[in-house]
Image 1 (cartoon, rainbow, N blue to C red):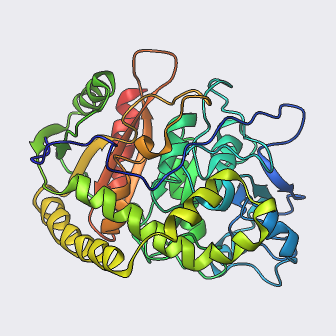
Image 2 (cartoon, helix red, strand yellow):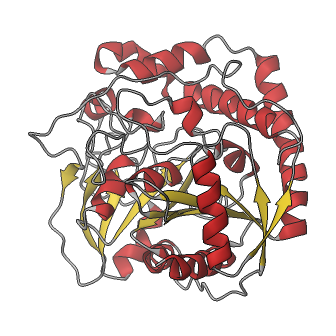
Length: 393
């Protein structure tokens, strides 16, 4: 368990809460559908990532209004092109990637295939739905505070957040560059391997599977989720060693401050077009304007300390296991985006890779296991996730 008490949201003010948006009469999974030429896997691409000849909208009317078709692909697309991937479209997302619910007033909210009353998760909502509904074999998403892992958890699929800096961010509309990552989403771990090979040709997932996982237990997590994690690890024959780390809540707060500060630098100019912005980005950009330099500097100092302390824990146990979400996916009208990132943002602040996979749980939707490893250990994560996945089938 964590050694610092707390974990409540009373002192965390950096996310606004959206109201629901549901538009069943139109396509809410994709912003732009494309003819899928090629003989490789069907690939959906989050509409933050440049695809030649297509406007990158960032899920935002203000960006779409000012945009023009991309003159070239983002460099990260080169592996997919070389492999003959069939690009089926640019997927919908939470506006400007700024929240974790996936609710989008501008382009509609992608429908969670597990239960239409539940959030799809964000910000890579359309990518998760495209994979879950088998409209794509693999999807590319981005993850700044959990934007791959949360929609994967909400839609019952797998998602991988690589090490920060491993995949080029050139040609990707940023949210917070010091936290942003690009990674694959798929229905299972084999699909994640395909996705990593598209992002990084030659990626090899062969790795020794640790027989022990550091089991991190944090405050305010649904006990049914904790039990599901323990059961999945036991089914896979993995020993769960309880571990602790100080500063989780401080890292959560620091990550939010950094996200706001960097979002303001990237997107602050869009406030001039506020009539074309949704409530979430307006609220966050206005909140960012209240930050002072000392607060941001303190958050970055916290981040440096956190990377060292969390890194020491990961070195001791190799992998850390915990839920992806503190709760089961909430309803559209009940989602608290701040709460949803409580188990994920500190991983982004550290810059470490993490994988999320669905596991059995009591109730109508699966739980989601999050496994974290040290920088560059994506192969270890996929190898371990594959063992757990097989044991839970």
